[in-house]
Length: 128
Image (tube, rainbow, N blue to C red; front, side, top):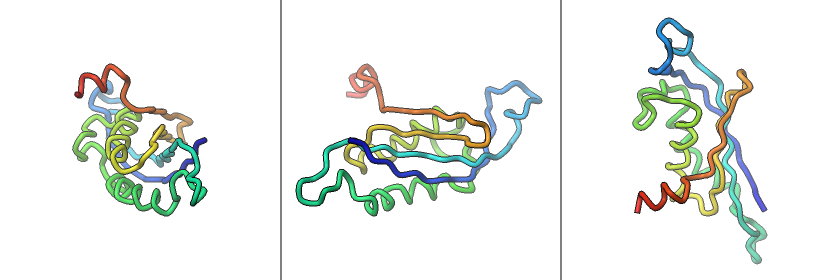
């Protein structure tokens, strides 16, 4: 079973790898939406997989770190693609949110997004 919670953030960025003179090479902004998915079985006593209030508390710091910021200035996001933003969020939450299964990051105005389900088995082995 899965539950999820979303948060939104407004942020600016530019993509250093974009061709000079293109829109992505210049500073521009987006409205982002992040969805955090937790997987597990409901606790027999509480009925919860993860209490939504505790999840909101865990997400607050991450949301504050991203909202109304220039993403390129955030450590670990010097090239803030959707993929890197999803990994960055995962890394911030993986030790705080038991059962973290998936991080989605969407640019709703563009109809684009990224789904990250954590490091691959090869990446986990390399990190050990």
